[in-house]
Image (cartoon, rainbow, N blue to C red):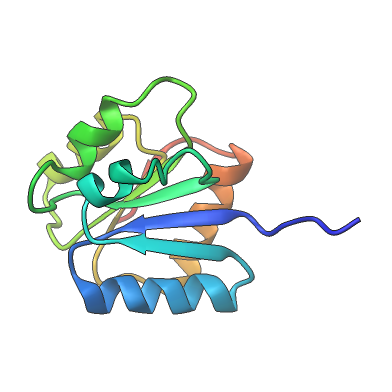
Length: 129
């Protein structure tokens, strides 16, 4: 019996970042889907099948944190990413229910570890330095 790899859904309005994350996740053995906005994701109910969401905190349109906070409690875990390295962004991501906050640019290994911990529910919610 084959076990399907976890599905990671990435929402980032930077197409080059989305493409890079898609490649990184695929090489690491995950299935990945990318969307340019939470509206595009919501239009296809793309979050329902996800094992983990990777959300840019500051998106055009509805932001990743406010959208994620509005989901039901059964939502998949989320790792927030952002080009902003300020304490308010960190706090916003974690208060929205995010499992981790990682400022861009980030180390791929740390990113993948955060995804694995979010899926497995291991460890506390964290904010990367």
